[in-house]
Image (cartoon, rainbow, N blue to C red; front, side, top):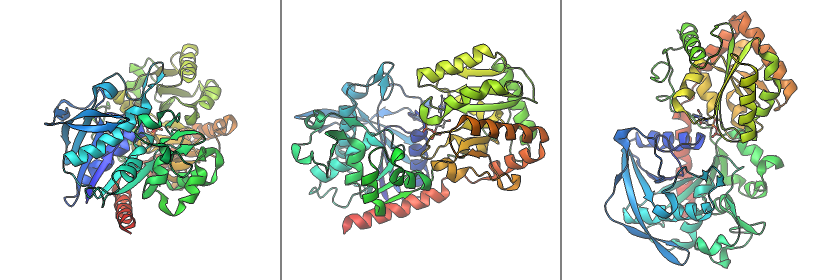
Length: 486
Ligand code: ADP
């Protein structure tokens, strides 16, 4: 199958969170099958983090992308990542600046045009490269206009008439909403500014555009696909549209790239280990990280890790509310950037409890690996969680996740009080009292050892690979192609 992936980030080139992990991993998994040809399109942001051998190189030629009233000269860069052909859309005007979506003072003022341009340029680039995709898979609002452009401007273009679209919602809380003043800048006319098409409460909504124009819609876990349709607070105003498209909507659980996230081979951690050697392996990683972060070096302390965007979604404020009650037993190690209030809260915790807590507000891939390997518990009491990758990574590294039963957390972390059947700890709501109680249970189990170790083995045994989900996506692609042709 000829598959075009369009995304605003993909590991190992650009990543701010789970979206980047998923688009990178999925492209790679599909491309391993010789029956598939996979082309991944990304914006060429200025700051790139890939290994030297993958650095994008200029691709010959140029083409023009319609934008508003004019044409943007567009060039491409190219890299080959295993069997994936990766093309980067170059634009001095839109992408040659620090960061991906925002500056330190907030979202970039022209994100409406930046990602409209990207979406349209991908279609022009496919034609320029003579790559006729059978399916275009778009991810999140940044590529939400692509299916709308395809339908509106390329509907009668024979090059694309067999191209189906699949759109994946990675997080419905971010929709790409802009004023209607952007309509002409991004090349649409008032004909498209209707409730059935692009209009959303008097403005534009790129996520909605995708929900209207894509052949098939997916989201990243079965539970989240229900929650966004039937829980008003998680539908974020789009639940009605999602219910209308219920027949075309499904939830496919994300996987993790088990070659990158593997404690037995990970070169970023202090000591490798697997399910047979996790006791010594995790202990060595813990002692070394404690030393490195200036914590009390003591194997009997529970190390509770956090690797996360600092955002109210993640429920970390409730961790801050109760952390000080556990200082004699738990060390809190947090890595994450985002909300200044939450970052300040973690800084305070460290100042007031030296030796018992550590915090870094960087985006630090090597440190993230070290935290997963060293942690006994991994805290993720999210208010909502479309899928969540961190809890799966944590389980693979034998760190028991403490989560809320929502979205993908509910689908991956099982806790019923019988150690043989548990791979972590789960509470119903992001609530101080529930988290306190659950941490108390975890402390008891850690001290008693046996049940805790049984749970670690269960967690490490889990299958978090893409094997099953990639197959589900391919089946959905086939459905989308069929649907598109009818
Ligand atoms: P989300 O996509 O909502 O941010 P996920 O759990 O799906 O959350 O994915 C988070 C990914 O980002 C994981 O791979 C996690 O290790 C990584 N991550 C989050 N914050 C940081 C950070 N500060 N430094 C390094 N990696 C991070």
